[in-house]
Length: 600
Image (cartoon, rainbow, N blue to C red):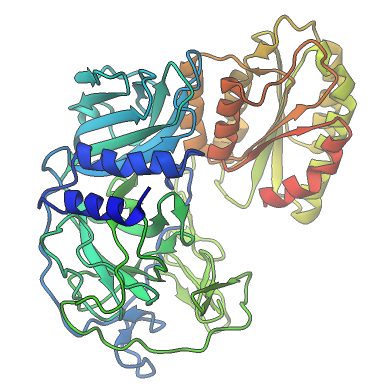
């Protein structure tokens, strides 16, 4: 296919109106993604946990270079403040809230493609569209954060059997903002695109500038769809923008840049600029090819603390194309050769810089960040404001704890095991692996593990549930539980229910971000309501789920990694930022060092 012809036609269609992008225009974009990324594409979302943006107090420092201010001279000052024209986020079907490609759509008549989608407080009438290049009759299911299945206010099937469009008018008013579960059912395994669009008063307008102090972010007002000035190929650019209609304390947190389904950089934290109408910016960034479909995801939190996402398209223009005004000359700097505090050197188009992560910044990641208006003292220790604590002032102090003192530096740990006789040959190795994991964690961080949870399930029944205050009593209970094993009645079991039970214990209510380890030789067969509820629990507790399915031993049941239940199990692990693995019994003990490093 001719990239140039397609992209020119796509841009001509997309930029032909002054309203928000339409459903038909988005399908033009998604049809290309389906052809170029059949392996699938999902944008960053919860569980993508981005750190809150550091808020530095403005200070007048004589040592800051011209054009910069802030406690650490980290905030640019715009030299040419410009008015920004706002586009209408309530026109047509509104803004793009979520857009993804599923490689197998519904996974057949008994399978689902599941997505977790952030619905923010500003969303009004919402349109959800699923579309495939083949006639597989895809359909949409939506569940609220509390697990309630939602009946749409209207739906329409495409005549050719390739898609469905549903509308929901009062989602936020009825169910509130939060993480909604979106599922797609289809009669085939062809790729499909899933899009969520919503009329909203909160929309982003901005553009790319070549100097971080340039406020001229709107070059082509005819475009008027979020990104109104495009970057120039092989040129360092910064995306400056303003989120219109965003009520405090809501804020933009990070921007993610894509070309097609390829993420160009790790998500870039949003920073503030002074004296600018486009006061938020992310960068530096660079595009290296004028061909392809570029888009960005701008993400943040609304005033209720819920995640919001907005997607916008843009293009990479060639050198020498006219610009509205000659851009100021960017300062040239010599790239670092090393990065401090765990930073990573990245090089793009001969531009070398340190990627520092959420807790450090600076040329070589030499400066510690203090969150929530904390101040970095001369001894390198963050002095926190009242109500906050932690090495980086990142933790909130609860004045009236519901259950003891809440502290993210402590944790519980749960082990969920299928208690059938088919697991008997693995029991000793699972016991040893659990003991090694606990020993490693306690060796690296004494006092980190405060409680231990054991869940044994089989054939849809709970065989054992226990919470233990110390390692020894837990290991004794784990070892004795081998006497509870029963005959397996099926090759599937209520795995999700077992995990949900562990997350509903008092230990997990007190210690969030606690990990769960699952050992099972059967795939899940739980009702969708259990799965939707479990996704909600993971979003709340933010604990990692490590699932291990033994290889061999159970000759009756064979695990098919192409099965929809296995893929759903894998998506659940990925949602929690954990993993699912296949290993022999002896390998269970060899995996514990990698797992324990991931916990801390």
